Image (tube, rainbow, N blue to C red; front, side, top):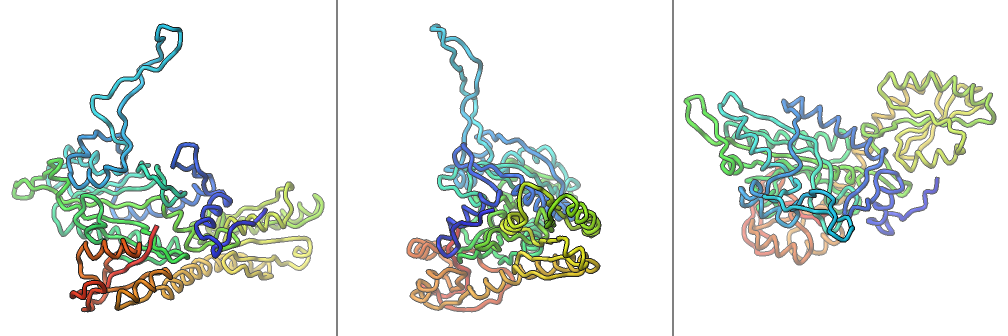
Length: 490
């Protein structure tokens, strides 16, 4: 399998685009701005889904499903919400009636205009809160903890596979609570779930923080986020959790009777991650040899390749492999035994390396004689001869080591590329090199916009659980209670 493709140093963006396609993760569709997620890419997404879905259910949430189409009037009920999504909405205005002859014998399509235009969901707050009005009557109905797995459409002009497409897959949680404190607690709890998933499953360290007012989700009072640093020094927003206050409850008149019988508007949250995580996974760990996948999300964790001449040798090897494969699978490790006769072992080695399979085992006639196998790990490309008696435990331990190594490598990169600055000149110099830049900001949107316009850097978040540090804004010199995180981003 050919590995020839652009290196990260040559052109990081081109490297990413080529890798996603050549590793069989996804491809562009003939529908403008949309993608086809191929089986190998979708298998990774399914593992992400399974892990997250369990985490949601373990925290008391249930899955439901709501319509793809949203009446335009619903979106208009929350002013900030409709303004925030106005430029991204795809709108259905007509429906097809039938084929009819126009008198000349030519068959034409007749259409009729909808009484009310329908928005193809960019997010589901409005359609869901319209349902919640019917579901919530009393404090006994709270908290209401609902998640849905769905697709959404946001009409992006500039698209990139997984990172930004007109249609993408995601999950969106929508919850209702009796008190403000409970809703804030939920928002922060789900941010913690996302951070745990990113770090434990994706081996991707993240910063937890809140967005500035200008970067908040449309209609939110507070947006919490996790931010990751990619290998080109750009930040990627990997997940968000929003405290919505009572905005949507008031817009849709969702009230509950408290224990004293008094009617109150409920308090709301929403939170979501999307197939953008696939892009984050690729960019966090992959290298110039191809994809690198953490074992916990790899569809194939171990690939076994026989090296043989003739059917007799293959049968002998296959007999040995059968026991190894079964023993690994008993430990919950997914194994592919590649005994195809259409490709040579060298081609297979290159394929599994390129597709990021964490561990590869090679076994031939000499290995059978010696009672050994060759084990190669994808993260370091190291190879080791291991006794067949020890290979099961060795590979099981490798799964843990590779997962930890990928996290530690990404964490070290982030540490090495996080810098504190104390002047605007220093800021402009450091931000050009990439990475996270910690600097003082006076808290005004005017200063935030000036920095964005002049440097293309944005405030990624105001860190949670960090020390307060009095200082002076790098632009205005006005007082600042703590440093905030700046970076260029996707």
